[in-house]
Image (cartoon, rainbow, N blue to C red; front, side, top):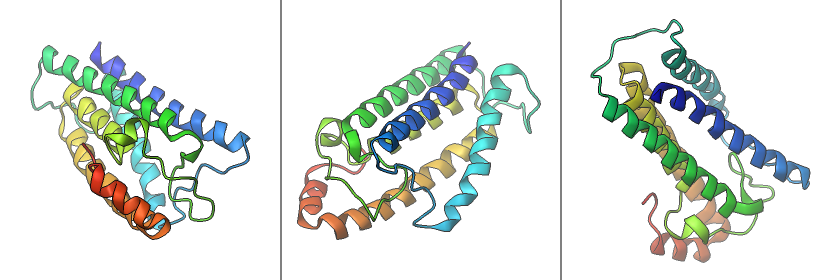
Length: 188
């Protein structure tokens, strides 16, 4: 049962992001800027699709690279499902807090105001924290080497993107962002 919840988590996560981006696009602002800052970002989608397939394969018994598990515990699997649920809730709170400022990627041409309220009063990067919780939850649901590699690589990619965004925000918002950065932690 937790495996099904893991697959559903990915559908809900992607759905939330795409629906929010579409809502912003309807108001005349392009919300998707993925790959504009660094063309190497276009290497990520094929790996993300394989990740989605791996999670769905674990849930629905499809062929995969590895069926070997590090361990098996129903309790740990449900803990992973709980982390996925927590990640989804944090993602939803982040999308609501972002309002019209939400973007996928860095929007250097039309950035909105700096968001420091809602969940952003507690974390400067709650969306990446949400994604990391989901990756960790997915690993606990299906603890195999492939999902462990994805969790580690995902954490590294999130941090890399955070550093890019921080450089842009410092340059664009100056002292306002510096004061915010000094007041609120990067993650939690």
